[in-house]
Image (tube, rainbow, N blue to C red):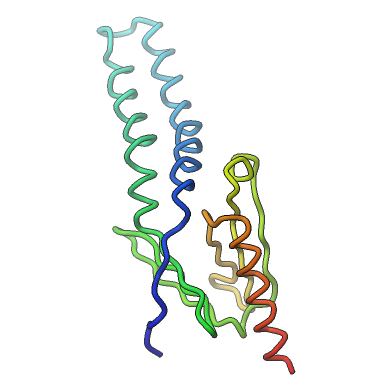
Length: 155
């Protein structure tokens, strides 16, 4: 089976959503470094400066790098999700193996009109595959297209 379906990137607004999540994550070590700074255990800036640089990298650079490595394609008989750089993953889910499909949004994704499409298949290993960063309307359209494919295959 050859991969002829062109891969599409996620919605660009997903970079902002990832940055918000990264900022929430980076706030924890930054707060810890601030506590250590105020305790004046060592020279000024020994904790906060490296923590600030790490937080800036986590918030500004990492989300755009992750976004650039996510692609997907919904073909006539399968869903393909490609992601990663160092740890590369190319997942192909045959539409005939899908048992149910979820479209969900958290509060931040809802604010930006995005959703995550999750398909559940039979089996134990990688039984659920998620595709985040889709426009909500596109995720719903993909869910309906997969559902129609499953209905046709059962006839």
